[in-house]
Amino acid sequence: MRRGATWFNATSVAIGFAFLYLPILLLVIYSFNESKLVTVWGGFSFRWYGELLRDQAMLDAAWVTLRVAFLSATIATVLGTLGALALVRFGRFLGRTLFSGMIYAPLVMPDVITGLSLLLLFVSLDLDRGFWTLILAHVTLTMCFVAVVVQSRLVTFDRSLEEAALDLGATPAKTFFVITLPLIMPGVVAGWMLAFTLSLDDLVIASFTTGPGATTLPMKIFSQVKFGVTPEVNAISTILILVVATGVIVASLVTKRREVERQKAERLALQG
Amino acid sequence: MAANVTSANARASRLRWLVIAVPLAWMLIFFLIPFFNVLKISFSTRARAMPPYKPVLSMVDGIAGLFDKLQQLTIANYLTLVADSKYWLAYVSSVQIALFSTVLIVLVAYPIAYGMARAPRQWRTTLVMLVILPFWTSFLIRVYAWIGILSDEGLLNQVLMQLGLIDQPLRILTTNWAVYIGIVYSYLPFMILPLYATLEKLDETLLEAAEDLGCPPMKAFWTITFPLSLPGLIAGCFLVFIPITGEFVIPDLLGGSGTLMIGKTLWYEFFNNRNWPLASAVAVVLLLLLVVPIVIFQNQQQKQAEKSR
Image (cartoon, rainbow over all chains, first blue to last red; front, side, top):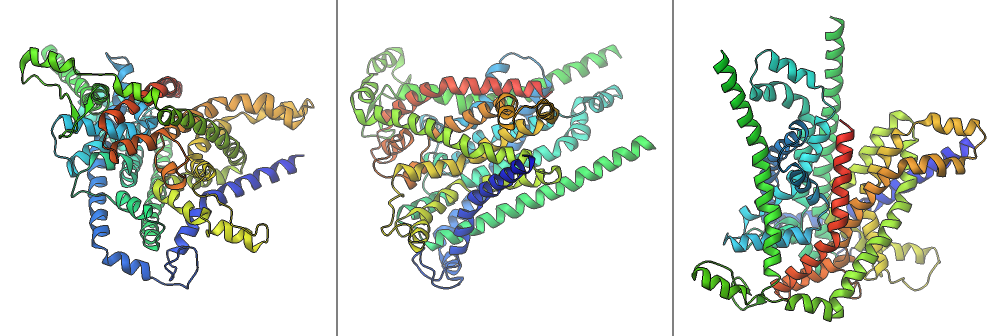
């Protein structure tokens, strides 16, 4: 009986992962296809990567997207970390329910609603739509994700360290930068990366809130896809997948190693 | 000395206030207040101007002018949503598609999450990492990947024809089936992760006790494992149902003209017809439809966060 159950579990996990990864794998394989027809294999080639390098509009869009993602993720990480601190550390304060509601709601809010409401705000305020409105929109969306990630790190955290620092006369600000921040750093880094990829990825909110001169990569890809499947889109997708996967894997290995080192140091400290 | 402590306390409370005020102000300005703006514009009429709606409420003509403009507000857009079946059918169909997809996602995600939670301990972190990894790669790209698989001359049809299972290509792309496949694929990690989190914490001695007492494994699953996994299951359902209802990219790229979804309607009303007031009314009604699930989701998340403290 037990053996049957194990076999069933292993099979469902294997099929599940095949389902998750096969489409991405096929997409990557077909980016090296010589043929213009995406579904017919015409031999291995880097042709579409070459085309991509000559496609100035696509490169411009990629550059805009990277700058927006970097800036908005950085601002969102600062605001999101403050938001997480307010939620976890400050107990009850006036408007706490409203505040936590505004942190959780954007996580599930359909993009079309967020996009439309931000656009109408920018129009009402008479702001020129473009690079900066895009950043405001992405900060709003992604800071909530950062807050949730950092919050989950903050709740598992030993408060006696902070209390010790405060008792020894450190100011609250100093305590935060010397004790709290280094300890929640893995959460902050994960939050930044999540914000960065969400911004990199967003089509709907960007389409609403950007203006002429600030077309993002997803918008460019979307308009190409509307004309049909093109191998160039496979090529740019492959590059994006590669960059993001490398980033995530490296970051998780680094945090894992830091964690092991920290635990070792703690053990040594306790023995000493 | 005492004065020093007081000033330190005052500084600390000022700091505390700042930490709350900055993100709170940001979310008020860019998240909450914009909804009231959408509400206001949903009562206006389309205009050939920039912005393309009237009246534009302002105080330039004084109180009387503002009052005059307020009288120009109308509920015409909402009447359109009720009268024209194109709109209300899109709401009904969105909720139907979201409900059916949520059920499909549960059926696919549960065995995977269960298998992961029962996998050897040293593999589990890697397995979780492998579920998260596709979630980090672009949503748009993952949807796009399915076009090449599901189209008439796509890979799925090629394989099925090679195997001799069919002799005519199956029409999957541009049907609701393609939309379901795309949705299940894109939202699967959001269900697997909360389910896995609850299943992994499950006390295995309970199952061993049941087995020792002669309870068949199936019965043990339904009386012990399943009820204990409900918090994760419910969280996962909200996490997928709410955004799927307003989904735009998947029905637009994988569905056909017959795929009615309200996110698509809103997009076309805004970008193609440039009818901002009607698009706003569509958004307001969609939000009203989702407000109850969103509030339940928030409460649940908050409770979860407080419990883990």
